[in-house]
Image 1 (tube, rainbow, N blue to C red):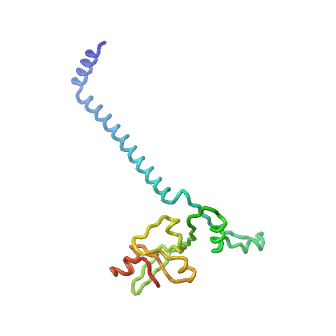
Image 2 (cartoon, rainbow, N blue to C red):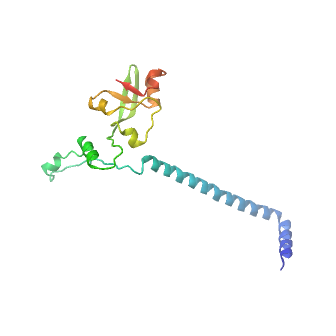
Image 3 (spheres, rainbow, N blue to C red):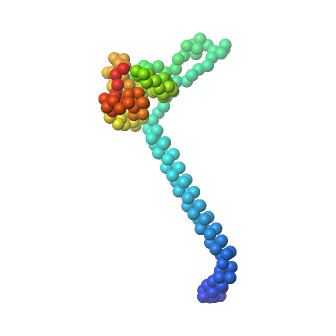
Length: 182
């Protein structure tokens, strides 16, 4: 059978069964489109997950204190163990080579009150001056607190834009400073 005969037979078949041919073509078109859409969604999801992982940092090491639960059989020494303490940060930083930054973090949900403004269940992170380096955080304006302020136990806070505007409204000094003495 030659190519011309194949085309002729195919054309006659399509012409005699137009509805079936149309539905078959429509099924193929919808099937191919669905595969393309699914591949695009999969690629987008994969990119979002990769971005989240990279944003966390591939060069970060997290060290967490182990919470110990005791019972009657636990020794006195193990009952007194408290996990990591703040001086462990200095020891890690001095004894491990190649550290670009080290940050201690404690998270809590607190009620914040400034004047008559009260915000409930605000996520608060207690941290150290290297937090922006470790977490790859950039400030919109102002600066982050420094080691001198930490060593002098000064009451300073870095605020996010949303919390600052809720607490202080449109006061430019506060809303754009993100660095507030309490």
